[in-house]
Image (tube, rainbow, N blue to C red; front, side, top):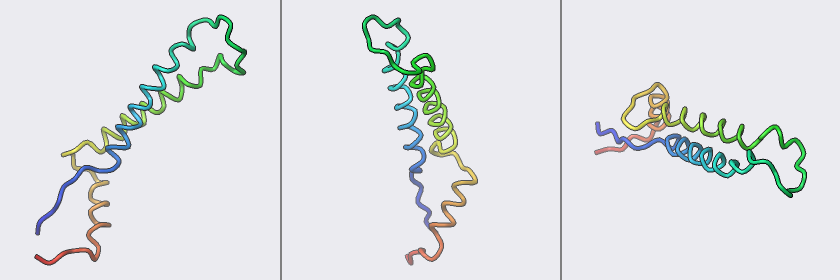
Length: 91
């Protein structure tokens, strides 16, 4: 039986979340510089961009760690069992 190995879609999702987290963090660096002439932003002191960038980065790294190519996990067994139910091709 020939078994195909490919990259999990969750690996790419993890990469995208990690990259978005970094981009949002970089975009929010000016928020830490004291405002000079900017309009008032409600709840600016909470730094929502910082928190979202940290959350996206950490979730992205978690997805990358769980679905790294070549690493066998229980989730792969579940994916393979779902895909192989009734879809086996004859050679």
